[in-house]
Each structure stands twice: as structure tokens, then as C-alpha cells.
Image (cartoon, rainbow, N blue to C red):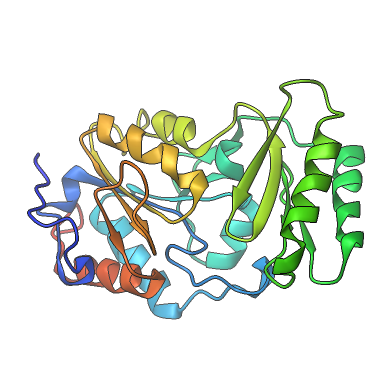
Length: 262
């Protein structure tokens, strides 16, 4: 199957791109991609039409829709409840290859003592929020953007005392996340594409942050396409302006798509 794009800067929300959803897999980052960013992770909101859209596309693709996030699977499921989809959580630390599959672990969670040391960085000032993701700990400074340099320096100092090569610091949109080394979305997506119903499909991936960049190279190896949100990222095939545009595009292919449910 060929997914040709004549103009990579086209208004993607007005373009289908997908001739047959039965041959595609749809992989979606969550925060900043299909959901608008919020002051804190707990404040994100899933518009009800988006749940219906994702459920429809999942039906059309025969279950080949996956959420790919830094959030843990339990968090993903709670946010989108009652909808449950295939998913990659914790930046690749957890995976569920189908909606009804038992999740399996690809990494060991960060130790409680290390998490406490990292969470103590919030003492730098108000507005720095610690989010325990199980396999990682995220420190958000969206409410305190002036604290970025001090926060990063403190995290680097703490991480430097861990065994060499055991941790990785992930910079993101006004967040610094600390996770076990060697776990990432790209390798998890590569593994997901070996499981049915994803195996043999042309994947389309949409992501917005630096943690999503390595995924675009993997997607290309499966004959797929990758799109960024808000800016053009390396190896992406084009970009959407904002999450609202992504939701509009998904709604369009849900309404027009021909797939396994037809």
C-alpha cells in the first residue's frame, strides 16, 4: 500500500490520507497530540466526541489503534474510560497489544528512595509539580517556567549519583522526566508492530514532543507516516497545528473510513 502525500504542509485536518483503514494502524501520543495540554497532568480533559471517534476507528481497523504515552497504562485507562485500547505506557515500560490483552512489563519501576529524592526538587519553589508514573518520575514546571535551569541542575545532580548508565533524563514541554535507561517509545512501537492486528500494517503515528521523535524513524521502516503537532520534528512527514486539528482529522477518517467493520 502506498500513502502518497503531494504537499507535506497541507491542511491535514481536511485530508483523509488513508484509502483503506483495514491496511493501517493508528498510533497516537496523548498529551499535546490528541488532548490539549493542561496546567497539571490531572487536569487534562477528554472531549466525549474523541472517545466516540477513537472507538469508531478502532472498530474500522479491527483493533489496530494504540495510544503511545509517557503515562502509565492505568492512568491512560482512567482518562479514556470506559474506552480501552491497545496501548504503550511509561514511554515503553508497559505494553498492551490489544484492548483485552493482559499488559506486560518491559522495565523495572524506579525505586521509592530515588523517587523521594527527585520529588524533593519541588522545594525549589511553588509551581513545580511531581508526578509519579511508576516507571518514571516527572517534574512539571509549567506553573514556574523561571525555575527551569535550577530544576534541571538539581535533577542532573541527583541522577549523577545513581549507577552509571542506569537512568535517562527526558526533557519535554516544561517537564523533566527521569526514567530507567534503555526504555523508549520507539523500541516499544517496533515491538508492537510485530503483534496482530498491527503486524503487516502501514502505521500512522502522531506525536508532539521530543520523546516522540525517535518513533518517526521506526514508523518509516514499516512503510508508514509520522506527523508532529505544533512544529515539524525530525523525520516527520508533516505536521498539524494543534491537538484540535488532530481531533478533526481523526473525526474525518472515522466518518469516511472503510475498514474491518464494513
